[in-house]
Length: 468
Image 1 (cartoon, rainbow, N blue to C red):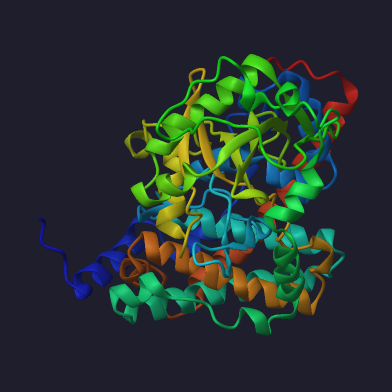
Image 2: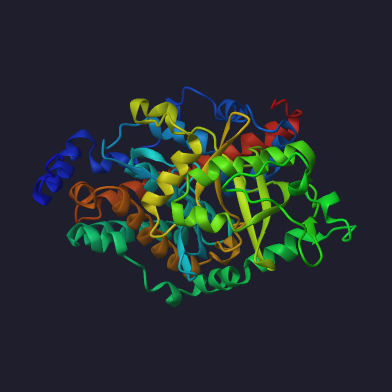
């Protein structure tokens, strides 16, 4: 075991990185250094996706500059790589923005609030997450109709909260940082609706929202993909028997939910075997007590539209014990081309799982990964992101309150997965880092609005030619 550096040594290393990149230099943004057009980057990112869904992805991105921002991580990843970096690498969320925080059930059955989307997670310069979150606050505030001065203030509150939290974590015992919980969430007005939505988004709620009684309830085997005669049983996939009570199947809700049957459904169900191997033994035991009932294709998010996303309806101790698993395709992180040897080469679903476990206080107990026909997938319980912020609430006081939450949450994630002492050494006590990032965020929000106009013009002027 390598001897760890002392706290003083790690703090000094952080301070030394200011010579590598001055804190004031974070303010700089210019599109003049771009070597690739945003439109070209988005076209490349669309390769390999379901071609029939690209138009829907473009539609969701064209709604507003913030919608475009959510779906254009490849553009910002490239732009961030054009400038020098601090050289202080940390596990990144990768897609840090205001809508990627939310409430969900923890392993102990109580509601948690944390960053909850890690599709782009990777180890990279810590400030990339900070810049993206600060920019998102300005764009989300503008979309909600907040005055630009309030948007700027929100970014400043986020950055101050991030800096102060990092400094606090740097002085705490390591295990206290690992267990740290944000207790003031219920005192924040904008959080009340999020927790209320999370309480309603139960498995039974999903059951009623996503499924319906089978047309021929007396012949459930005819409608359930899991009852195929070709289905194989494994230690982690119990044999399926006729359930008691009426059988339910997925609804078809165009274009976001489409039921899958036959051999394609069986391939998805068969992927549960490899998935079970990625779980801890005790969680594998719980999974083995659920049997698959039905399968569907689901369209989710903005940036993820076009990637393959499946949901499996499973049943445990009767019809009142549903479990919905989401099997979500994971592509290589948009940041990977700019990080050289730092980019992970292994399973992309596993990359996301490990990044999520590193940054979250507690993660979904059914978080794992699998493969389907040579593609990498993340597996987790379906939460449908129903318990995230309503952007329309982010006006004035609500925007400022929520900005403080974003700062503390991102700092906690970085402190858990990285070295808060080194980060504190670099950031320091003064607002110099905050002020520079705030200038970048406003400039990049303006740039995003310009890029959005070009994007909407391009998709309305010619048909989409993306190929799957």
